[in-house]
Image (cartoon, rainbow, N blue to C red):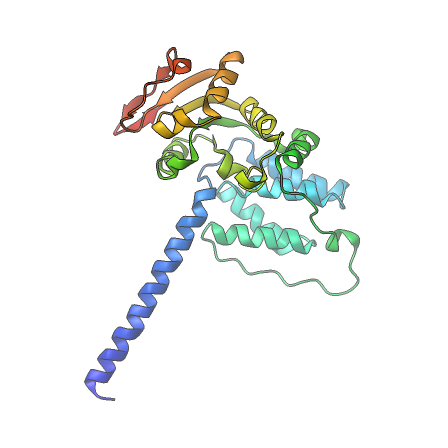
Length: 273
């Protein structure tokens, strides 16, 4: 090959490699949208509950699935070690695959454990048979509440049209050690907009009961949202704290239901709670 051909080939290969790395970084960023980089105080109890269920009620795959999905929302040393253990040791194929995919979404590089040989027990082949809707979410949470230990420091009252600002806010609050609830992040499957039904609001009420503070992200989109006023009034009736964070200017008048609420102090345009 001539020097020109060598240089052309080198340029082609380095460009291809750079594009692959760029695409990999983009996918990781997309995956981290649904993950909080914080370690909840109850994470060890949650992990213990998984192995307790596996020991005493081997066929209760749905409960283990629910715990696994909850733990995989949080990227920290404890959950990564837990997911690695499930991926390596759990005998149920579906649960191992969920753990494997969760590790990949966190930017880890796991090995997918091989399927076990020999006679298969029911617990190894029983599938996850959870329906995707708010009603199913409510039933699962009520049935398994004692072992989920779910607690959120902050419930974000918002409009999903402000996605970029909300994700930036989530990362900031996580950096302060706060566990945040955003419906399309924490319950992205069950509370998907296309699955809404009469139990969507009761499911949100349950999540608000699990939250200490409501942080209202004041934008024009939030003011137009059909849910934000109900969320604020729900917290007020519970005598729980409601704070307002205004990330930018608005063209609409501040709603009457926010008139008596405090605004967050700002530090470099980020809320201080």
